[in-house]
Length: 100
Image (tube, rainbow, N blue to C red; front, top):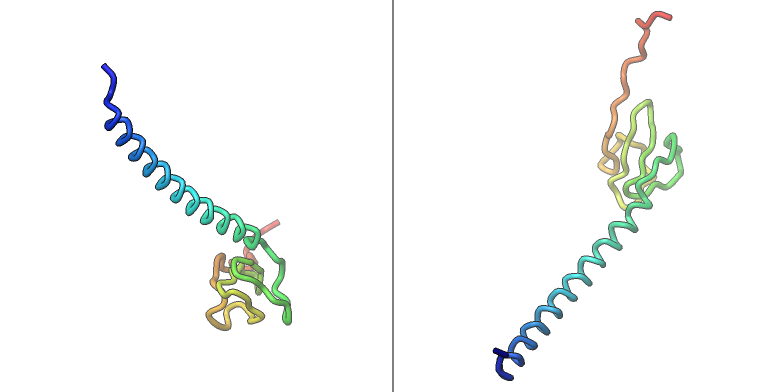
């Protein structure tokens, strides 16, 4: 038993709407993925913090034995001297009590 012409037309319309909605969501998801992938390139270790050098959001540096992550869009500020940096790994003790 086959579906009537009206039923087939109705299903085609429903399918068309579903396809459009899925395509729109995929386009949105692809844009979000592209934006996240672009940010990944900024997740990098830049070595020891240097005065006068500009660091970008998600860059990390070492300063006074600790590792800091830049939270500002861009910063020349020294880690620990304002809101531009977040402490990721705190410096440990010097280990003077270690024996050879």
